[in-house]
Length: 402
Image (cartoon, rainbow, N blue to C red):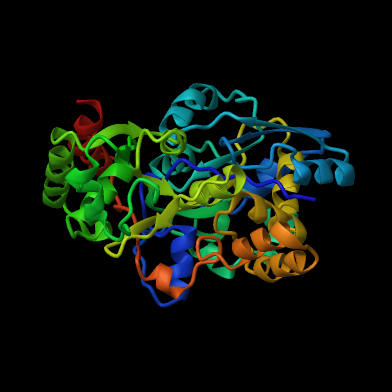
C-alpha cells in the first residue's frame, strides 16, 4: 500500500545554538549560544502536583506537519484512550505569539495543551514570560531513551526544561529544472537577472535577513549592525531590479508548483515531500555559500487544561516506531537517530515504488544529514537583547513592506 507523505514548515526566526546546531557541534562544527536561566528547583513539582489525565487534549500544529490520516494520533488514542484534536493553526511564530499572549498573560487557557514552536525570538518570549510549563522528565522515558543526547545542549532551552524537539530542518534554495536548465549552486543565483520576476524570497525578516547576510559573504552568527545594513542593501537592490516576484510565507510551495516562481528560498522537507506527493521534480540545494538551520519544538502552555495528556503524547511520539513513521511522512530531520535504521527495515519489507520512496527518505541528507551538509549550514543571528532584535527587524522589515 502506498504510504502517505507530506511536509511543512515556517522558518526559524532568531538563532543561538539550535537543537540541530547541537548536532553540528557533535560533528565538530562549533556553535554559538548563550545559556538561559532554568526554572526554580521546585517549579516542576509545583506545576505537576495534582495534575491528572483527563482523556483528551488539543494539539496546535503547523500546516502539513502530520499525515492527514493522523496514524500516530490514532495509535495514541488506541493505547491510552486519550482523544486528540489536531489543528493546523500556526502559520508564523510572531502572529501565533501575538494571538495567544493576551490569554496567557491573563492566566487563561489558549484552548491548546501542546503546541509546536520554533527556536525563535518568540520561543524566548514564551519562555521568559513564564508562558511555558516546565516539563516533568520522569514522564518522558521514551525521549530520554531515544532522542539524540545532543538535544539537551541547546541554548534556547538547555536541559529541555520547557520543550522537546518535533523536527529540524534546513533553509536553502529550491528551483524548477524544467524552467532553469543550469544547476543552481550559489545564493547569488537568487539575484540573477535571468530570473527576473520569477524569484521567491521569504517574507519573514529573520529568514530574509540571514539569507541576505550569507549572500553578502557574512556569517550571520558573527554579524554586526553594519553587516545588517550591507545585507539589506543587497536585498533592496534585488527588489528594485524587479527580480523578486513576491515575499512568501509557506505559500511559496504553491507558487513554485504553479510556475509563478522558478527559484525560491525554501525549506528542505517541503520540497522533498512536494516531489513525492505531487510527482514534481523540483530540486533543493544547500548553496555552496551556505544555508541555515532551525528546530521546531513541542511545548505545553502553562495554562493548558490537559497537561498530563499532552506530555503523554509528546513522549509517545518518541517511541521508535512512531518517530520513524512521522519522519517518513514529514521528511524533516528526525530527532531520533535510530529512526534511520528502523526506516531501512520498513523499506526492506516493501516493494516497487514504496520501497524506492522509503529508501530515498532513509538515505536523504535532508532527513539524516551528513557532515558534508553540516559544513555548509549556519546559525542565525544571535541577539543579545530584545533591542538588538528590534534593530535587526527595523533594518530588514522595509524590504518586505516597502
